[in-house]
Length: 251
Image (cartoon, rainbow, N blue to C red; front, side, top):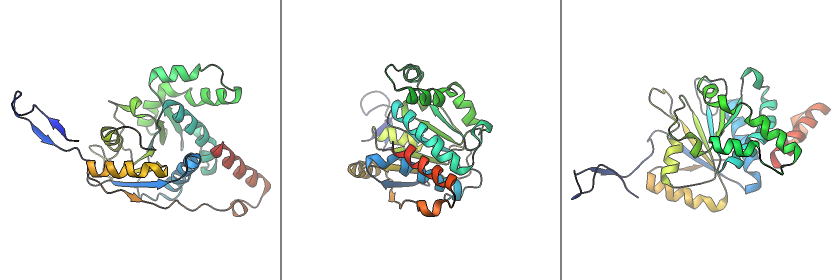
């Protein structure tokens, strides 16, 4: 659909009309996986980003992950936190490789007091949301490297030096995708960014439709390889850690 600037012909001043489009220099990629493997797939992509710097960035990557809902954001962050940061050797208390969640204030309050939640899950939710009042400043100050959020929570906010955006599924309109893609490559940023969508098979056609409307060419990428359990560790503690990470991602 076309997006207009100014008035229509015959209705006030004549305006200039142009189709919306994404920044020409960014790369748009997607990975296809079953719904049950979405978070595990995201984890593998993040590991590749931070461990190997596969984007070729000069500084540490800064990532925004867009979840389809507030509940999905909390669930994704809680499962990523232990599985991802422990393997990278990060110290979240010191702000290294840190992960945080930004939700609309109404959703934050609702989720932190959600009735009938299992005790273990309730504790995880509260721990994820504890620092959410400080999330924006922490991310802006580069004290955290990954921000898990929703489109609604980031409207009107500016986060400098974001290198990559991950979309969990295709949610919303072309304007929503444009908003997400606009988080990378802001004014004054020296490096171009990547927008990577983790999709179910049925969502690929949605992305292709968006690419036609917004005039970009998405590229399907292969998942980064991961070591087998046998090669992941030669000691008992390492094997237990690997199993713990797998369990946290798939459950």
